[in-house]
Image (tube, rainbow, N blue to C red; front, side):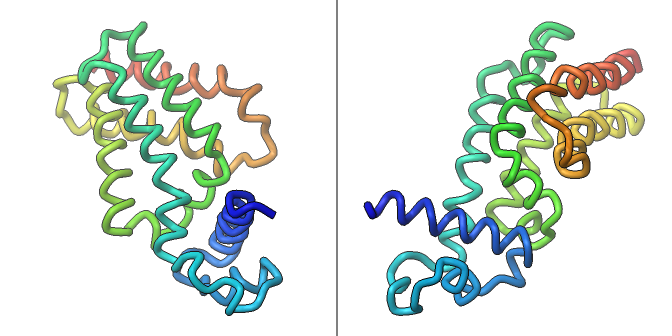
Length: 181
C-alpha cells in the first residue's frame, strides 16, 4: 500500500473517531485501534493536532477561496447569490467535516480553526448585510449562515446536492429581508 493511500486511511480513521467521540474525547490510541495497527506501526505518522489540521484546513482554504472570488460587498441578488451558492457548494463537498465541525465545540473553539471559521462567517455576514450594522441586519445575516450550515448537519438523510437549490432559495429569502432593512 502506498504512503498516500495509508495517509488517506489514517485521515479517514481520524475523522470517524473525531466524529464519534469528539476531538477532545479522541486519543491517538483510538485512531490506531480503528486502523488495526500497533502503536509502533503508527509512530511517526502524526499527532492528533496535525490530523485535525490536515482534515480541516482544506475546508477552510476552500471557503476562503470562494469568498476571495467576490467583492467584499457583492451586488445583490446576482453576485450575492453566486457567492452563497459557491459557499454552499464547498459545505456540501466537505459535508462530513461540516457535520463534525459544527457540532464539536473543541474544534469550533480551536485557536486556529475557530478563528478562521469565525472570519469566514464574518465575511459572509458582511456580504449579506452590507453596511447595515443594525441588530436586525446582523441577526438576519446570521440566519443566512444557519440556512446553509444547519440542514447539512441536522437533516443528514437529505441528498444535499439534490436539495441545494431549495437551501439556497431559503437563504436568499432571508437575504431579501435583510437587504430590505
